[in-house]
Length: 97
Image (tube, rainbow, N blue to C red; front, top):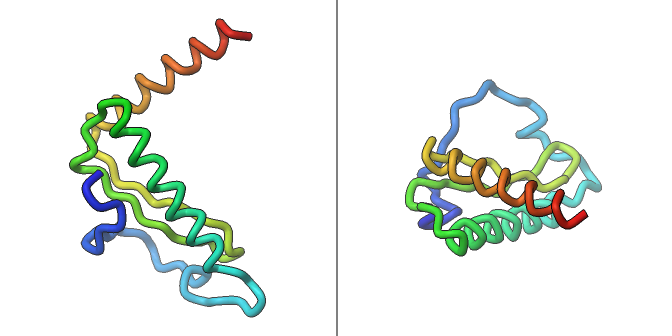
């Protein structure tokens, strides 16, 4: 995942008024920090699992209510690897129950 905060990562989406209007009293910074930490955790987990993170882009953001959001752009091969790892983890958790 090179740099999860790649400034060049732009996504195409419709204009969202809630995304540009800040509401008084909403703590957007805490949500953004939490999203940044979560994106770094994901990057570390993918690297530790041996996944190819070279094409992964993650951007910390917040919703209109201040809740942290991580926006991802992933190569298809990486998505398939994450799905394989998740299926494996699900199987191990079921056996442990």
